[in-house]
Image (tube, rainbow, N blue to C red):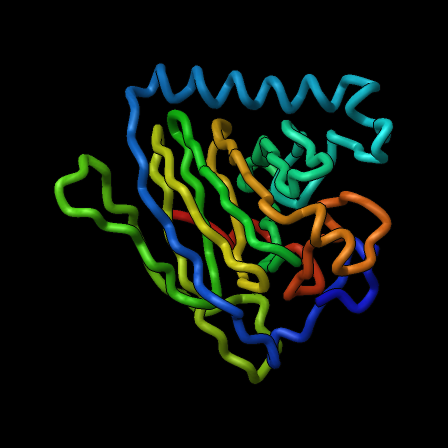
Length: 237
């Protein structure tokens, strides 16, 4: 999928892009505010501790740097792959887009992803895609129904209209999302208590398949916009 394997800002033409699949979102649970914040605070603290730890900010014996930075937030590789086990797992401490006045870009990955989105009080996550979401609905289970809406994708080139499909994870909630390889998505957190627990089931395979030099989230990402837009491009009312 990559043109330049280790390019950390590879951009593909939105006008010719077609999603390889669609994202599936499964609402999991909602919690009292104190419980939700305790969970997100603990996970965010772990990510930030990793970014202060020399052992996590430089390559280890396998060449993996566990503490990394992505457009949406700071990340920490919680569980690394090893011989016979291709998957790994990351935590992400989201930036608050309203504080920074900047949104993340629509993007896709060189392999499939499984993410658990977690929010605390006064915090929502807007997740977007160029293809409508499928929401898991198993009758009889005590979950919730997330808000969804569509708008015009603001980063489309002049003369090219694309619809952006959006889903909102409400405060004090967990929601899982399955993202196929080559499928567009975009996360933007509104509020201070937002975390993603992300499993990359085939990341070590991606490194070899794309002929990459190592494990870097930005290199395993392909963007569909040149620049990060201001926060009004991913606002919530």
